[in-house]
Length: 258
Ligand SMILES: O=C[C@H](O)COP(=O)(O)O
Image 1 (tube, rainbow, N blue to C red):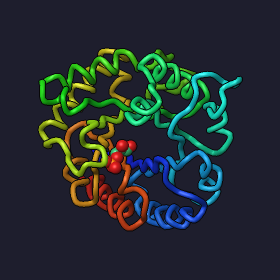
Image 2: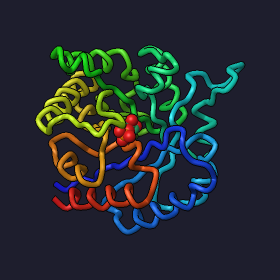
Image 3: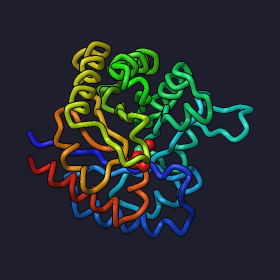
């Protein structure tokens, strides 16, 4: 069967209101290729304005707090993201883990908070270069999933919550470096993640989308997306302009045709 790849741009700490022009241009490309699902997670300051500026793309946040409200200066809750117009949150990104000391239990609590608030979640996992070199990539990622996967009700009012969960496999050494794992390494890791999801959620584990992230560009997107169990891409640097992100969306449309 054909599938609808999900291409998500993580703008990280980039973008001001001037950048909405790029988002509009990306939206125009997305509207022409409905066989591709497109999302952008801008900085929190742009979520509301971006939601108003685009029609064909999902808008999301890059983090949320695990509590619903309270004395947490500088933080933002899942309900606030939703209120601003977000439909999803990227959680547990390696940059949050590295620079903000986020732990697996915190990431799990954030995932549960976001799902509970009605958002979709993109949960990020991935190994360091050292872990990859010492043959521990799959065990590292499996361990992260054991600790971070939300304990979710499988069915909620007829809706399967697992359909609102995606995993982004992002090898840390591939983020922003121009280096990517071999296609065989990507296939093996995604198969291992799928097995873990089915082990955890039963049949519903098959509904969880698995994205690849780390130096995805227009020229490698199609071959990566063509790998078994790769249901989309989480794109950092190349998502910031329509020139590069639009080209990835068009490459993904080729994948959708298969
Ligand atoms: O969330 C996105 C990733 O960290 C990938 O970033 P990158 O495409 O710049 O390597």
